[in-house]
Image 1 (tube, helix red, strand yellow):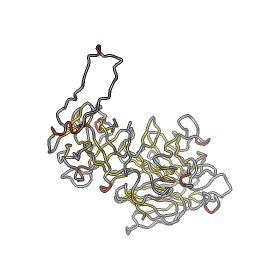
Image 2: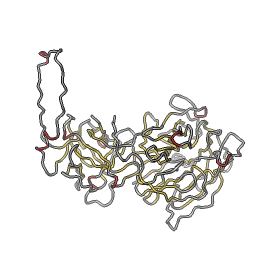
Image 3: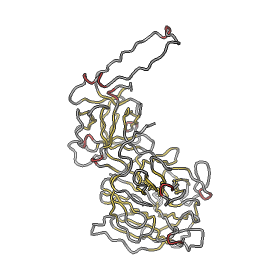
Image 4: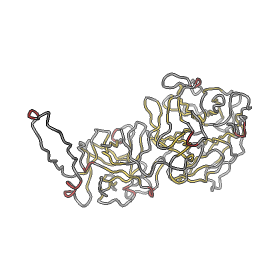
Amino acid sequence: MKRILILFSIINFQLSICEAQVGAPYIHDPSTIAECEGKYYTFGTGGGGLISEDGWSWHSGAERPGGGAAPDVLKIGDRYLCIYGATGGGLGGGHNGRILTMWNKTLDPKSSDFKWTAAIEVASSDGMEDQDAIDPSLLLDPTTGRLWVSYGTYFGTIRLIELDPATGERVKGNVEKDIAIDCEATDLLYRNGWYYLLGTHGTCCDGVNSTYNIVVGRSKSVEGPYIDNVGRDMFHGGGRMVIAAGDRKTGPGHFGRTIIDEGVEVMSCHFEADFDMSGRSTLGIRPLLWRNGWPYAGEQFKGGTFEIESERRGYSLELVVDFVRMEQERQRFWQIDPNEPVKAIPEQKLEDVIKGWSEGEIPVRLSDYMFRPWQRWTVTPVPEAGGYLGGPYYRIVIAGTERALTATANLEVTTSPTFTGSPEQLWRIEQLTDGTFRIMPKAIPGRDGLNTRYVLYSIADSTPTLAPYDFSSDNSKWNFRSH
């Protein structure tokens, strides 16, 4: 299971080598991706979990006692609350499950403050009732401060209980409520006045034959009823699809939402089988998009050759070079013979225009897209440069050349004649919740640390620059068009 974490801090995709989290992202039933002291953590079934220094490359090393299944973790104040299912789910042949919570000051196992408190029980099932106390997830309601848990599997109902956010214990007198059926590994989130219940539907634990997928319903009350987009109640099997199999990965389950910035969200899950990684269960991170009030998974950006188009006006990012006309045999339209055969006109070639370009830096501007070589950009992941939560850094060069888009010390953009791999030539590309993209240099020359503020920005119809990210402005937003 997973929960919300706030981090401060169309497109025809082509195949690249960076299709999934890299390193050793092997996990089943991952928890919330939690940030702690500059690193990212997620915990899984069986104990332990993964750690990442940058959000892109993952390795084992996270520690969680108690074993069991499907943990969730949430930072509350200056502590981390972990919840997990001790048994149940048919483990050991039964459905007599127990849900336990415990606290820690840090998630870093090397810290002197690292120590989990004794686990306490907050819910259970006796193995006979139509319920299975397993797969818990946490929601700290941002409107009330109340702490909720959803849990359960296909063996009966999905239930809702309330915990005390100060202690992690069950609220005295709280009575569990059934809110859904026909799913498991649920998750709760709140957004814009709606509560969303995300459930994992289908079959698990069968590798490439697993049919897991994630569905959603929503309600104005955390206690439901949770209704899907065509009016079906999740208590009667409803649910709108959020993500299913794709991109040579099957069986997505155990949804989690991470807010990186305003309008920048990702979802996490595991895929039951990654066809390119020996069919293992792996961590997946995708852009989380919203349309008409409903969440759905975006696609992992993979690079390619594109027009980079400003959302502000629809103009294309291009080099500031002379326009070179194309020769064309033309006829007056009233003299055209409709029976005369037609022939394709080839596009202008790079070698037809590059001899007129400067050998040094060339600035950039925005203009009408005309299929010209100075308007076509090749975007390629740079694996050795690391990454961020959800993606690797990319280089952006004029197609067929090494001429690289480069951030400057005075918060402008230019193109350098050669790609060197320097931080100002590496770009963070994130799909926003509305489907557009923000494009952000890894670093600004002369400024310390990673850049988390300035993005490629259309300050006027024809003037690209670097400026603070603003989701409310189309000036911050771009599209990648494949022509």
